[in-house]
Image 1 (tube, helix red, strand yellow):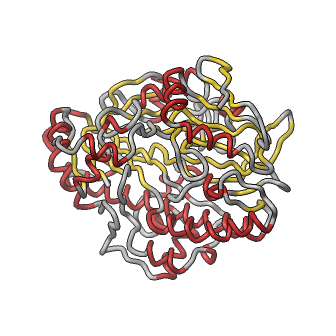
Image 2: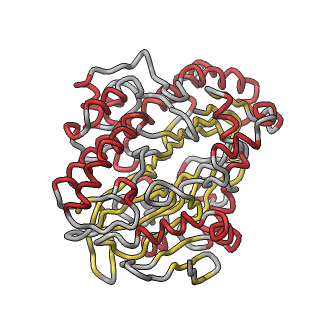
Length: 480
């Protein structure tokens, strides 16, 4: 595949054949070489997305790009009516997988004598692993459908959080387009006892320390003091979201045939945005996204409870407040300027985070002067980052940035390479208390399975689509 270098951190896949636009990949030279030699399929997926009707601007990939279903993970694409489409492959199976960050007024010294106790308590309080469920929060079908309608607000109304939490969540934790009636009974049944659970794979709850501050003013606005303790929650819509995606793939394949959409890959099955199939999927996807927002809200409630018992103080006294909550597997209608014209676009972000700049009306008022927080988790052995959105991101990537480190090794390859290692002991030697539902998860999630997130963040910063604020190092890790 021909790739042209536009700058030190920006590459173009030229338009060719039936492509309707070109592709843009943000990467350094080492990353692009690895993509060319080891993961050409991900680059091909960038080009494939450029074939879809109604695409506006380029098909974009972030530096944490790797192969996914239909779209590459790290993919961003925007579509406009009347010709534009919505594609489940551009959102992913784990609808609204995302990240929530809590801050506190605790320090590393406060945590040290209680780290083991806190790790054990978090592991007990937050069910994790394949098929994990809560026995204390199994909802009726009618109540769960209210969750799908109200999102994080449902949990707050039921005493699991505060109204102020909602002011620090993307879309205030609820997509208004949701229609619970469009979510199948099978999907609802799968989600009935999974609210407040991590799930498996790369999902986690981490207690971290702010070990570096790169922008003092912005860190102060976010409440991130050097040496303070934070908590990051990474999970999504669990079985309900997965089932929702699966339920709509067949109808989307049929819709693509009906509307005579020529697909370079059937995993890009899609329907026009204004079609009955497109509207129905968006309503179901939004409902699943609301489940994910509520899931992270409920988990945060149990995190606060674990801290309260461990430290003998209230969450308020401990300063356990939401910094922000972002989704990174989503499609949303937004207004963007394209060639000097304001246009309403359906922006697909799959493994990518919204990154709006200072002054943007969709940035919460508390952060309007500094821009939207962008939460970028790394692997369990190194560090994560907090960034801010920029005007460069708004101009070049429809206000999008990276979402994590990006895998280097498949789960199978990671497990094979770590077969004879004692990973929990390795983590302990790094000063990290690790708890996990299974050994399989631990070996699949070894740090070497991921790119160094510092390299990913450096590309984002140098390309002008993100601004670095702070680096967080894990001290306690609860893995799915």
